Amino acid sequence: MALAEKRGLTLEERAFTVEEAYEAAEAFLTSASTFVMPIVKIDNRTLSNGAPGPVARELRALYIEAALASAVG
Image 1 (cartoon, helix red, strand yellow):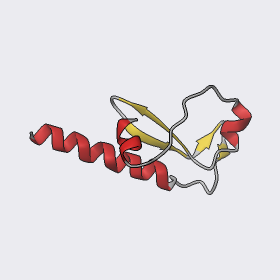
Image 2: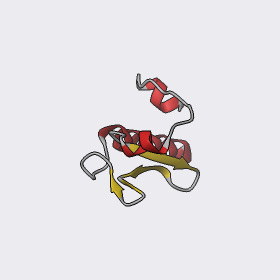
Image 3: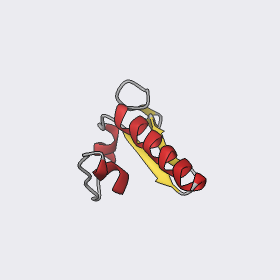
Image 4: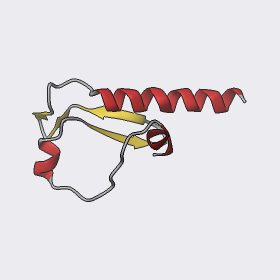
């Protein structure tokens, strides 16, 4: 979240409905093991154009960049 905010992205954490998820322009999940993983399908329904969106791709790149920088020292 800090990386997204540093990049000027506005974040909103809140509960959402399944219907909202189906209508999302893009979606992703995060965890310690998957970093930022774009989601292109929910319950066999394709989101947007079925490809990872630009925000998810950028956040994944930022996360990997920060992880590599901290590993190198």
